[in-house]
Length: 485
Image (tube, rainbow, N blue to C red; front, side, top):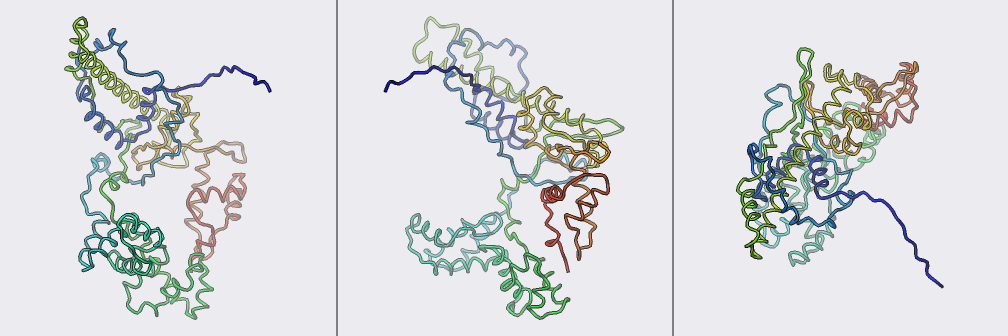
C-alpha cells in the first residue's frame, strides 16, 4: 500500500527565555521576589545593587558583539513547560491594627522546630542505639500538624532499606507508643480519633471511666456527625454530663504540632503585602511594596571589560574569545533580569490601580457589600494586559488596607441579578448567608431551604443548590453538623 505524504502549515506561539523569566517574576509574591533577587545578585557578577550610572544608557554591550550572543533560538519553550495555573501559595490571612504594625518587617524565627523538640525528648529516653535510630526515623515522618500519616509496615520497609535494620510491626509500634507519650500531647497520632484519645489520657489517668473517652472510643463516628441524642441514650447520661463531655472534647487540640513551625515555614506563613492602599481625607494612596526590590544596575567593570575586548578583535586568542562570550552572557543575563524586575513592578502597579478604580467604594468603607462584580476580563480591559497576566498577578498577591490584609482574589466575584434586575456581586449573597448563620439558633440551625427562602424574600432569585454551593465555599457545614446541645 502506498504511503501518502502530507504537508501541514500551522502557527504555534512559543515564548523566549526572556519572556518566560518575566512571567515567572510576575508570579512571585513579595518574599519570594526578594529571595530571587538575592540569588541573582550572588550568581551573576555583572549585576549589582545601585542606581544606574549616568552613561549606562549607552548600552556598550549592545554593539556588534551581539553576534556573539549565546542564546540558541532552539531554546525557546512553550508556556506549558513552565506554567502551572494551580501553583497558588496557600497563605494565612492576618489583620494588623496599626500603621506601625502593618509596615513592620517580617521577623526571622529562630525558635526550636517540632522535630528538634521531639528528638531532644527521644535522646532522654535511654533507648539502645538501634531503637534511637528507629525513633529518629519515625519522628522524621511526623508532619507539621503532629500526625504520623504513613502506615507502620511502610515505615518498617523504609527502615530495613535505608538503615539496614530489620524490625517487626510490634517493635515499631512500641517505639511509636513511646513517642506518643512525648510532649505536646497527641503527637504521633495516626488519625484524629487517636490524637484526641492520647490527649485525654494525658489529662486523666482514669480516662476510661470518663464519658468523653467513651464517646471517642465507642461513638466517634456518631460524635463527628453530631448525633448527640443517640450517644446520650447509649451512655445513659444526662444532658449536663453530655454537654460537659462535648466541651472537654472540643477543648482538645486537633493539630498538636501546629504550635511548632520550622523557621522558613513561619516566615512563609506570614503575609508580606505586595501593596498598601490607604484612604485619608477622601483620597486613596497606592504604594507598591519595594522593600525587597532594590535598584539594580549593570556592573561597570564588566561593561568596560567587554568594551576593551571588543576593541581588540585583531589580537584575540581563543581564550579571549571565550572570555568575551562569558562576559557577554553575564551582561545579557543581568540586563534581562533588570528588565524583568521593572516589568513586574509596572504590571503589578497598573493592575492594582485598575482594581482600586473598580472597587473604589470598598477601599473607602471596608464594607464587603460594596464590592462590585468583577472578573479577570474587567481588569484586563482596563489595563490593556492579557487575562492570563491578570490571573498571575491576582493569584499570589496581597494588599494591605485600612481594614486588614486581603488577597487580590478577594476582590473578584461573579455577578447575579436581583428581582428588580439590579446586578450585584455574589459576595453580597454570601455575606447574607454568613450573617444569617451567625445569628441562628444553634439548637435549631437554619437549613439551606430556609436560607433560600430568606434570600428570595430579600429579592434575590436564587436556587437552593446555589445556596448550598455558596455555603460550602464559605466553609460552613450543613445545618445538621452545626447543631449544638
